[in-house]
View 1 (tube, helix red, strand yellow):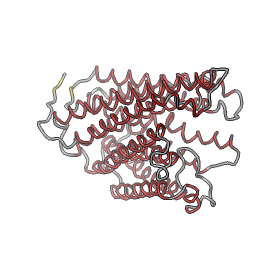
View 2: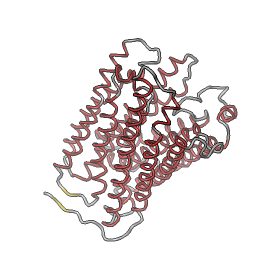
View 3: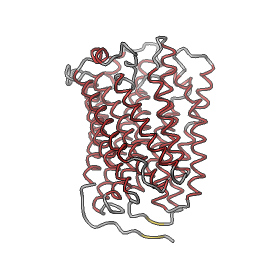
View 4: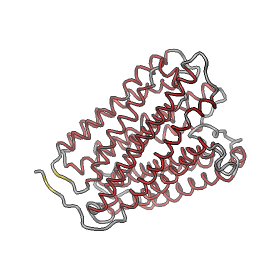
Length: 461
């Protein structure tokens, strides 16, 4: 760790992992409710478990992005963070807001929560992923603005690099597009049209810039490859991301009542969206192949390579499987969507945050890498989580395919619940895979508490 203020990233990383564990626990609760309908009812209804599961995903990834920014921006800018105190205050405010929101979901009926938090003054609640009460949304905006002020002032006062500028662009885009969560028109078509300006343009737009910057930063550090080479790759990747991702929003407009031209525009540009993820994979492997040193943190290198592969498979391949309008006509709203979502989020964003934590946490504890025993545990956790996510994706894909066959591609479509009963055995296998994933995550956490002899570094020069 080169700068003292980089230590401000540590609590953000710790909170991110804690909330990640909570997200997986609620995912397992939902998985059981698929096959045991009254499990934990009425204490935790399915709709509440789903809100907590998806909201924790968003919040912990935001903690991870903020922690990553607080670590890499000072190093890229070659100066201390503009205000470490602001970073500390915003951490506690964001954590308190997130915790209180989850408590609200679990303790008060959602309609009551809406009434108590001023939804009648400005109606923003009730939309998937954006269920947060108005005070929470306002709190997120305040935290984001203060965070962006802190990061922007650090960048402006120091060295400007491609990595720091791409990271900054992605973070500003994240904040700007979140503002559409406050726009909730009564017309359902308009509502869904602009709702995707938050959800899609986050995960298939500006978040990809953050992903690219974080991955490039770690690869520069662990490979020693010339920065100019990394920056050329990064420029091409973000260009393809923005070209395909922005107009690719149209694949969400197929069936909501938007103009018909979105059928072909959404299909064509969505078909291009796997390209930047494929380039990301080639980029990661190319950098490692051309490395000038073998960094002692082998676990962080593995996470970086895994990010490229799994992002391409989840966001690219599984996204392309049902993104064309003629195919999506049959697959829309089935478990194929869930299969794509699970692997895409894990590959593109979960893994890059874990990459950053794996690289930065040892440095913040005064060592270049964790011990060899610790890294063996962490590498085992990588394979447990990754293979478990592959299994979850395959099981959900099988469930979605069976849904299509039973309900869509037949002259005698089954009732929805009858079809669900037909695929319950697949849901059980998905649940077992989820338990393996949780075990892998706990092993990841445990690996940071294992001592022993540090791994040696070797130079290829």
